[in-house]
Length: 274
Ligand code: MN
Image 1: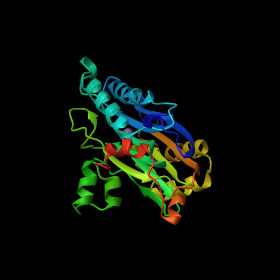
Image 2: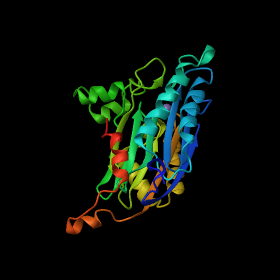
Image 3: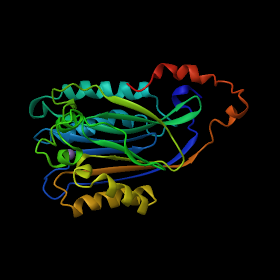
């Protein structure tokens, strides 16, 4: 088996839900929920351009559906190809753009990792024994103001600039994605969402609802429902991924004689989080 299709030492389950919300005419969000990739894209641009852009970026990633795992290099390549295709959209669709956030299941040295990718203000969260943590960092005006100390996180939630993204794929912006590699722990629950969830439902409530819905599909549906209860002024999309089983790793380390796997070197060029 090649390194590109290395069997993952984890078993995942996943579910997804989306809704146009209460005020928008079109749902410009798209999602991909087919192992090894779990992604949400939030399109922007008039004349249906947003949904074209969000669907187009995910189409590039769909090529890996059914593979045992995906490498960060493959994710970077799919992203770059999608960026070129979106930039080439013409006519009414020129200027279309989309966010992209989510996880790929990647394997390094026999250990499974969440490869988190993000550009824009969709989000990837991880619920673990340590609680709910936002892994991705928004590319948005209000995030920059929070980092500068100008706004608090709660002020950012209601600031009128909260929907202004500073990075996207297309839309004439800088489109380099950020990556994070997080070792998969048994019981991890990843939440990938558009700002239609995070803009309506605060993190503590997201965590509570996740804990109340153990299955991934029920959790995704419950979170979308909660956004609708809060008014859902934007399209809302949620993908939930559960790490149901994780093969013990590090067990060979106990006596200190671990032998590196031959394919570890093949994966070494994936580098660390950018
Ligand atoms: Mn949105």
